[in-house]
Amino acid sequence: MRHHPETHFVSRVGWLRAAVLGANDGIVSTASLVMGVAAANAPKSAVLLAGVAGLVAGAMSMAAGEYVSVSSQSDTEKADLDRERRELEEDPEFEHAELTAIYVARGLEHGLAAEVATQLMSHDALGAHVRDELGLSEIHSARPVQAALASALTFALGAALPLVCVLAASATAILPVVAGGSLLCLAGLGSLSAWAGGARALISVIRVTFWGALAMLATTIVGRLFGTVVA
Image 1 (spheres, rainbow, N blue to C red):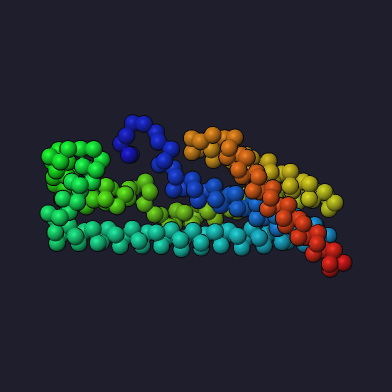
Image 2 (image 1 turned 45 degrees about the vertical axis):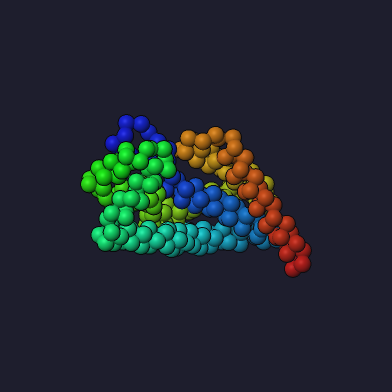
């Protein structure tokens, strides 16, 4: 794929997924947190403190979660690679027949499929089986560190946006300023992620703003109820 003259958006899927997840979670969770605290009639300093704490905790949680989950995927991929390598050493004839059957199922006649399997296995037997039998490729292979760093960084950047809104707003205008600013940021994120992935912007914008608005509404209601009970 690196030597292919065309640009394919699928090559971005690894880091794009983690980046969009991190930024979206940073905006939504932090905005929801500060709006819930503000709705409980807390002072602006407490709202800001809650937001900063949410930023730090969320970024670390995203990094740890991505690293652990993607590492698990990487461990599974490595186990499959080791098993395939062992099978190629122990029974190459069966592996050749297996690869031939795969190509027959894809539409090649048996003789041609066997010849293709022979040539690919003579060039890179493990690579051929990893690609065509296991469905793994360099593009989709797990990269735990990359995913963890991308998620943590983008979460922190996303979480900083609602905090800027809190700083810019007066104590009585935190809720509308944070809600409006965060929804605009989510719309921008949806548009940017759609552009980076070659998808339709409108669908992405509607998707992220809808769920973001729903989360902020829910925490605001909880904050109102909690503030009333405490009062």
